[in-house]
Image (tube, rainbow, N blue to C red; front, side, top):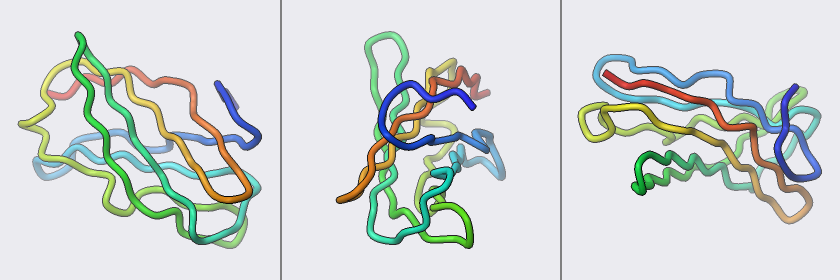
Length: 102
């Protein structure tokens, strides 16, 4: 598991185009709580796109995925994508993932 910063492991499990929408999903390993915020940061050539959504408690993780999408036509190209989770008790950022969006 590759974690770049924080006290928790944040993992991008999905970063793909589906039905014309670029979707990012992931989870916070070993943390089960509601109330945190998941933030996707996409960066390319001096441009940045930020998407936010709630962290949702699962049986063994906190899921990030709700509302973390954007029309693919608005973000065509190659991006560095990171997923950050923040709550009152935890914070972490995934390792960057390189994604090419057609």
